[in-house]
Structures are given as C-alpha cells and as structure tokens.
Length: 279
Image 1 (cartoon, helix red, strand yellow):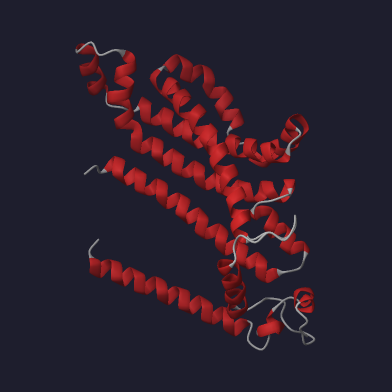
Image 2: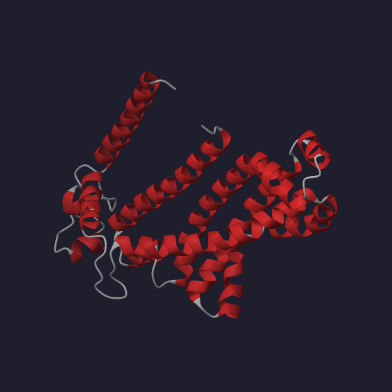
C-alpha cells in the first residue's frame, strides 16, 4: 500500500473518529461537565446534577479523566484505589503467564498431533469436547481446587489460550507439503531435525495465527475473570468503578483495554509478517 493510500486511510479513520465524537458530544450536550457525570460520581466531586440530566458522560469528561490517569498511572492509595498503570500491569502479567504456559503445552502437543495421524485420531474427541467449554466455566472449579484467586485467573487464561494454538499448530504441521518431507527422508535427516528445519518454518505462519487468536481471547477473558476474583487488575478496576457508580472511569478503562489488546495483537501480527515475508 503506497503512502497516498495510507494517507487516505488515516484521513478516513480521523473522519470516522471525529463524527463519532461529535455525535457523542451532541447526544450529551446540555449535560456536559458535572452534569455529564453520573449523579453519584458528581456528588463525590461536589458537583450538582440537574434533574433529568443524562447519566452518560460526554467526551470532554472522559478526556479529562483519561488525562488524569495518564499523568499519574502508578499511584497506590490503598487496596481499592490504585492507578490504571498498576491495574494493567497485574492484568498483563497474568495474561503473559497463562499464555506462556499455553505456548509450552500447545505447540509441542500440536506438533505431535500434526505429525502422527494415530495421535490425532486418539486425541481429537477430547479436544472437540474441551474446546467449546467457556473458560469462565472453569473458574469455580479452579477456585475450589487451587484456592488462590490469582493462580485461578492464570489457569483460566491458560485453558482459553491453549486450544487455538493447539488446533492451528496441528493443522499447520499436518499440511506441510509431502514433497518436502519426502526429500528430507531421502536425505536421511533425523525426525527431530526434520521437525525443526522443515516442518517448523513451513508451519510457522499458521502457528503464529493461532498464537494471535489466543492472545486476543486471553485478553478478553482476563477482564471477566478479574471481575469474579477481585483484588487487582483492569477487570477488577472496571467492576469497582461500576460499584462506585463512576461511569466515566468505566469508559476510560474500556479505552485502555482496547488499546492494550490492539498492541498485543499487533505485536504478534508483526511477528507473523516477518515469518511469512522474510527479508
């Protein structure tokens, strides 16, 4: 895509954003400022809300709160009052830990399934049963058996991230061109070396696609998991701010969740591009 196409795409994105913000502002106009905040939150700030005013904050209210969080993201004023940076750090840490465990399990097992039709047929019923189960359905069992909310959240991330990587790895390995494997066998290359020098490079784009899907699911699930287990994390932050009736902070948290999810996805997308189109 040339620079002119990129420029037009950027301009269109800015236009869409501008239209959305204008519509949002107009929808909450007359209830801006303190009136754009929900009543309980405005009362905490010492402001008055006119009767019949909308509980939905406007973009200027959200922007002001967003700036407050960005300028002081790591404050710690107690168990229920931590900066957005601390909350995101806890969530990202849990996601990376559970995701890393899923990588360790899913990719080797996916290789085994992809390279062995017998193992594939033997394990397929178990995979098909386990894969559709909602990750949050595991949370009560994890809390009961592990008895630690943080470890339970990591386990839920692991169980939701493992399946897309496992299935994509098995598919990528199983669809490697037979001619390449036949040539490797003719040259009497050992099985482990064939896996590393022939199968892995050929299946890498598909494996990274599975990893990209898994990180997106993991980031989705951690928010819901933290709402259940409480303590720290962006999911807990959202739930706590809802309990405080601070809708503006809920919206700010949603924006941060979206940005972090996009960054995680784009990091793996960049890795996939490097593997697919090496320089």
